[in-house]
Amino acid sequence: MTDRIARPRRSFIFTPGLKPEMFPKALASGTDIVCVELEDGIAPKDKAQARANALALFEAPQAQDGVERIVRINSMRERFGIEDVNAVLATDTPPPALMMPKVRTPDEVIMLDQLLSERGHATRLHVIIETNQGLEAAFDIAHCSARIDALFFGGVDMAAELRCDNAWAPLLYARSRVVHAAASAGLDVIDVPYLDLDDSEGMVVEAEQARALGFAGKGAIHPKQIAALNAVFTPTPDEIARARRIIQTFEEADTGLVVIDGKLIEKPVLRDMRRIVAIADRMGG
View 1 (cartoon, rainbow, N blue to C red):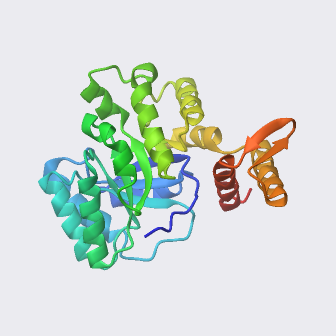
View 2 (view 1 turned 135 degrees about the vertical axis):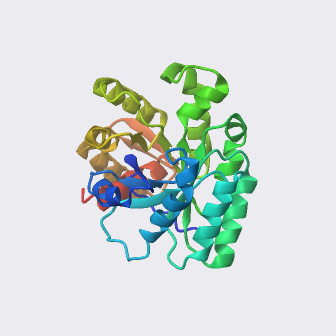
View 3 (view 1 turned 60 degrees about the vertical axis):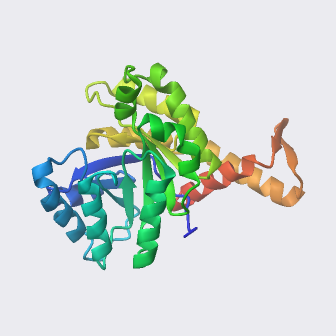
């Protein structure tokens, strides 16, 4: 289970499991990730129906359209989460990936990994860091399973746990910890959605701050936010050209450092350059 693939994860949007008719619309929205929601967005009385609807979506082969498909299950520490996992294990057509909310310790991820392996499912995992305990264990969580492709920063729940404002400055430390954990394991890291639909400029500013910090993308709460988010997190033609040049220069030099445009560049930079090129290739750039 080490088949991590560099891919665009510039934006994601949730679609409710209770309304499967919205799934195709979400897939056509331009986002890189569509996540079918079984957790916070579904009332307890509707959990079973949403679960059945979500899993039914994957009974038919999925189009190779470049959109990553995920199902957000409930916490494995709750009955609904256990029921979600049992349903995934029972089907012969599991979702390509599961998003795990409110993860506190690596044990939760390891348990799900082992259950999926025992069943023979190749399902990938995405983990939300949104609790104090999860933040403290973020490094170990990021390294605990080769099925993990990305960490997600759950800013709303994190702010509630920290008793701070849900704003950039108060959450900067927590965001940085999650970025550090993800980078140490070679994972993508995705930022929390911006909740003010009427403040598109504020969303872009926060997305740019997130990108500068190391995030690969950011969530959307409405399709109208997706184009702007994709633009922020898409490598520019100059960045892509520079990445290709750095890779080529290192390959030709066969050394640990090179000088390009008068600047010293060391070999660890190559990983990020290769990721930029891989994403550009997948986007046709």
